[in-house]
Image (cartoon, rainbow, N blue to C red; front, side, top):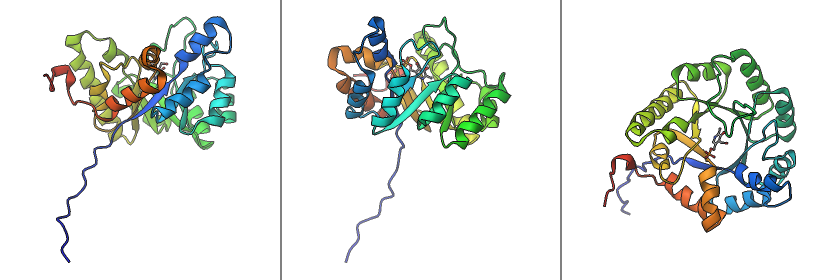
Length: 262
Ligand code: PXP
């Protein structure tokens, strides 16, 4: 019997896509009514290929409500990532609802969206205790931080298993500064992994700027919300998720520099 040449498989691990549905809840809360229901739309996002659903339960409940988180926990077929501030109220909710992951984020009432990363280096002990309690209850914890070596080192000493790198500075950079911001995120990813941390990223990513971030070696998951919900108005949520997932899973390595220019 002849055997064909055995070619070792080359696995290029692909980043997965977490879909943040806060902005669907924003439309509902604009009228304090019952539609659109983010829970129903989460199920459509899953049909479109979302690998997980992310919601931010804010202290002021401006978009996602407690009932949403409870129903998502009961109905999702993928993973639930609960973004929350490091407060006693949120800790109690997380321990009761038991999301698959908690992402700790900074929160300020007056901000339009999460502005900077968490200052883990500055608030070390409190974060460390909370991470320990959540992890002890079997909930994976990710810390949302700027791509900064000092913060990464603090995340490691806090015992978190994941970091989510803040991509806001990259997303907002002028075109000529984007390569520098991309390099910061790439370097932070490499450094975090060398410390034994797993790496996600998000904030401000769009259909136009996501590919270089998705192509970073070692990047595990991108959490993306606003741009997907915006496109969903034109093409429907399922299709908007499908389109984003295609970019995340098969990114051009360097579209900033036009490696696939026609
Ligand atoms: N990741 C984190 C930690 C966030 O706070 C947000 C915004 O809620 C996102 C990702 C998604 O950001 P965007 O809506 O800009 O895609």
